[in-house]
Image (cartoon, rainbow, N blue to C red; front, side, top):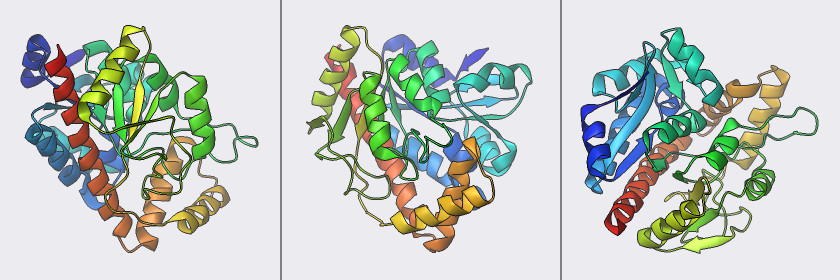
Length: 296
């Protein structure tokens, strides 16, 4: 059911540093197939840092860990035709021999099965705004609490209720670490978020905290890296969410709807910032994976 690419299989046998990457951002995260460019650059940055990229997705029913460039191109060209796959969807999409782009949660579920402990992404899902009226919480949070993986992201997606998400992560026992920052980044913006419980300054420190957490039998961790370039899109996101509510856009469809709206309203600036933070997070995840491998 799960197929490892040759490089990934070799890395798992030898204990080499490996970083998981998702495919939802390839299929759904960018306009016009630009997700392929981001995916390839993220993989390049992981290799440059001394680790092996393991991009995960479902291809014709096979759960693939380590995709070829041709397979990545297929996700990019499929776009919305690729199924957005969270943890609940993996088995069904696999049995139906579908093309499935894994979310953070879906990627983490596969990581747990194959033993990959580091992942890079843009931002994680969380508690949606207006939870009291329409309960909606991303499966990313529950999966992060269960699996022993450190996820590097630029915080929580800013279209969500960020303070509420931080509270839920505390309830679930998920450590939230700020990468050289005392506050949680807001995805596009490095400032304005709530305080984080802990701040780390080096890859070796992050690796040590992760290992200590896992030695206690606990699950995942979130390491939040501020984007190198900040973009204030708060008002645009509010407008996008209002439009989504008016058009009855719900569940997994909200994020791509809002991202597309923000892209249009910023004249593409949001896409540029998003691309950079994704590849920067992949590179940092690789640095930490290499530091962790050096400890063993």
